[in-house]
Length: 133
Length: 451
Image 1: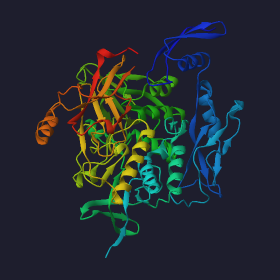
Image 2 (image 1 turned 180 degrees about the vertical axis):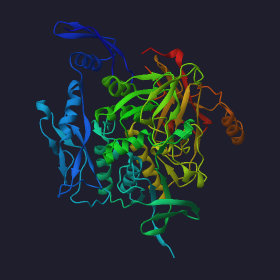
Image 3 (image 1 turned 60 degrees about the vertical axis):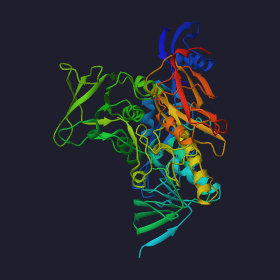
Image 4 (image 1 turned 135 degrees about the horizontal axis):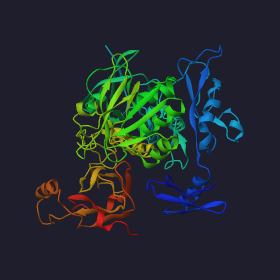
């Protein structure tokens, strides 16, 4: 059952101390200084959402690890429930990518049925050559 | 005979500051040579895989590598050449510019230029610099090194980690290591307040139930060959360990997030004056140091908490370097900036009033002001118009007690101010006036909380 919650707002550097009190199906927020903080506070009380960034393994065409760029950074396409983040890490652990990769490419579609994709956050040129750009 | 390369401008460092400087310099008509120690451009952003970059500059929440991609695309489009895996071993002033000795796989090269932009970033404080002495077992890493291992190399530094210091990289690594299955025993911070941003304390520690121990520090590292544990203790209000509070914490890794220091070895060798507080070169609003022809930007000037501001300073440094290289620069008229009580640091330290335009200031307070304060900038021309220029200059140099009673340039009430969070405001350099002895920054806590 819903209960009173207290947390620090992270929308801006001010860091307001928010209090969320159950109010029917939602929460009423106090302690906020702006509308963005109130909106964030309701979401945080109902279900905290976070983005997720991590890395995946980069393999060469023969299946061995890339020596020059062994990991590719990846990001979630949108926020996902904080409570599912550790489970998501296990699902992402199995992903391997092969060059070339372009930033924005989907490396894992519909993570755990959440409607969130994991996207490449960097590009990998073909082969092991790279001009540094 | 060593190989000699002649160019209008050189940018030292290919991170976000250097790439912005090189791009804006090239866009102003002088394609500079970027000299970078690593094999890929992008600097520290390459290993900062978390998001939150670019909110100011691009109004988007980017990861570090994504922000770096934009920097590299801009530099490539501007036609900026880069010498990678190249180390500058010495720099000296010549009759018409600078001569740099560079070492890379191709051997030793001399690079000659008219404008020199220092975009060398900063370095992490190490265990030796925070007085952790004794054995040197494996398993003691700075947070940035741990970040490189995990995010770039795909290696885990250990299985059970203690983090000393609550700087942002330490907080971010606490989360990152937890996500990778490493047990983070806790974060210990010697000060009574976290050093990192409030939002990082929330989303990196609270989200994962990682304890933050304030007013506590690591007093000893145990283990031969490999870390076996650390001793932690609470500290008193003078940051001294309190006898009787020591406890041993088993761990195989100690990660340090205990501060960043601008890297300015080459600046020192060129006699560029350094600010003892920021530990970077003193600059005007165009990022020109007090040494003619030497420009500086990004974390080499002062440690920023947003890369967006690093890029902004790079843009300014690049434009100025291009003007200097083409001989279009006018003589400067520098007015010193005096930051009064309550400020930890303020950049720029001088405003050049010869060309008008805008001057953007960045400042940090020296204490947490939860109710904020009124921050003002005003021109001090207190020595009077009738006195000789030399006497006025001396008065300004001694005028640390000066108050902002002169012409107002800027005033704003900040609702909350914390040392980890750098604030920014802009003044009209054209409004400073030729009679100015100084620009005085004041911070009034009594004016807090209104408006």
